[in-house]
Structure formats: C-alpha cells, structure tokens
Length: 96
Image 1 (cartoon, helix red, strand yellow):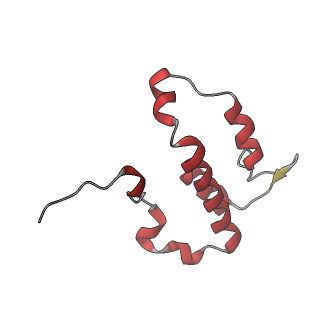
Image 2 (cartoon, rainbow, N blue to C red; image 1 turned 90 degrees about the vertical axis):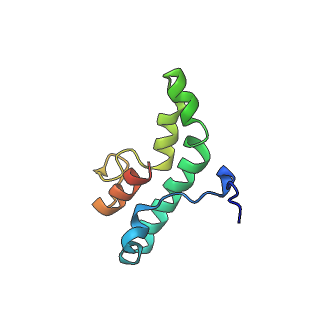
C-alpha cells in the first residue's frame, strides 16, 4: 500500500468547534457569522497571507473589507455597529 499526497486544496482545515461538537449549541445567526468570516478568510486572506508575511506588508484596503464584512466593532451597539453577542464576536475572531 502506497501513501499518496493529498493536494493542498483537498486537505481539510482544522475546525476547533468540531472537536467538542459545540456547533449544535450555536444558533443559526452565530453559525452564519462564522461561515461568512470563514469564507472571507478562505478566499481573501489565506491565499495572500504568506506573501504579506514575507513582504512584511498588509494591504490598507483590508480595513475597508473588514468593515464591509461587519467584523469591526461588531460586538458594539450604536455608531452603526451590529451589536452582536459575545459568542458571535468570539466566533468571528476565532475564524480570523
């Protein structure tokens, strides 16, 4: 039996919440927030983070993208912030 390498695109990504099956404790809004941030990370950050690290740079437009995504101040109420609960904020931080 020979071992074959799995292409990087097919490797599963470690999801901390899967270890204890805590996803079942989340409401749909919390799961949606985590999924939205996860998709942003997978499509926008993960493909570029190595290059940003190597060049010691971070694109300024990321701040605007984080604002559009709704993660900046998401746990605050007022001032145009979403006022999400602490669990949603923690999930977003964990995904980032």
